[in-house]
Image 1 (cartoon, one colour):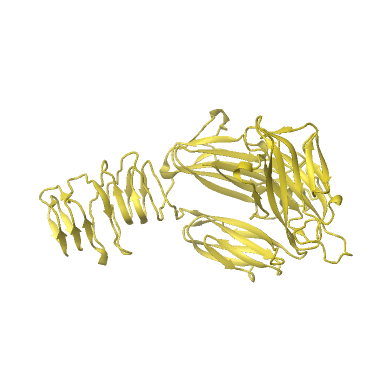
Image 2: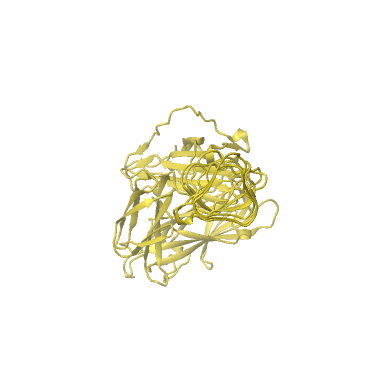
Length: 560
């Protein structure tokens, strides 16, 4: 299970912060104070973790955290003067700008560099939480620059909810976590009755307000399930979202365009709108396509072409030549030839065939467009041989394509506490990079801050960064926390992998971090852009049994 909220927004790309921020709350979620003004206010804490993901340090003049205060629903606190601000960076100070309702954190010098090795934490403790249920915007603004450029203000806004005192939504569990294609899963969760709940996945949105479990059938691809709870006033509701994921063995894959520069093997039925082959393609199952394009420098090898059912028509706009002598041609239905047709080998036409131009099949066949539209019952069957295309041409699939990997490459596998040096890889062929995180540290003390702190791993490719996280410590007897994601990487592309294993000050926690590469079609593996950064891997070693760490209920967390 992963927590998706609180959500955040950032400035435009030109003003996007140079530092990356994550925000968590304690308790999670925050509870609005009782409406009775005579009742003491609830107390809460904001924990903001900042880091620099780029290898180039950023100069920072100050960091401001704006916390709305007052009696209204969008306000988080009732009195900012009661809040205790702290920052973990040495030499930095914290103060309250009461007029701006901002906490200002600044270095003793005019500015200070923050590099990839300088993670830090901002804590706003003892917040007297406002008495109205609602969502509050928490804005983190930095004044930063790189090199000798001018300092610039850059902002990130987090949307933090204040929930009713008796609200809860927790423990979204997917069982099992790995299934065969077309298998079923059962989702279970715990929730309070004072909210509406929705289960979202793919294009599906289910109302599960009255449920605490749901069985999902016929799952054909890797799926992330989101459970969304909404409560409070409609003008400013609060939303909490949990997620869980199931992985499918040999999943269905739906894409817009698939370009394959090497061999492609399709072992099952394939449905595509347009198929352009630029390399060797082997179709060993039934194939349905609207357009099959083979460029003039390539060859389409077909042993048998058959019409199917009421769609048994073959339309040829050019010349058709079958070059093998002594073969017979059987036409069991209408054959219409509007131009010269030369069949030099056996041809079996079991449905209506329309030839509108000269067609020559003398072995290698070159055609600009081969259109096959047999309907639901038909297929294009390449029973033996292969489908060849020249280098530089494309194989485009606009429908579902099944891809079966031969093996995967382990790039990294080690305990989180040992860290991971940010590494960039280059793909020698198309494939998927997979990141996996597992929490291995347990405690029986539910007051530990590490239960709400996270280790994160990110992968950046084609200008897009995606990440996963697991808690640094989890509660005894709970289901082991793990998270995994896969990102596609095109041939010649690069992917940058990073791990943030920063613990809370004097904190505990550990886990396991793994990076894998799965080439499409059993193609080549990844290579590092900087080979010296590659951790050594023992490809022949047996799978390691992970060590787990357990702390006594009364023990305080300590480093290491």
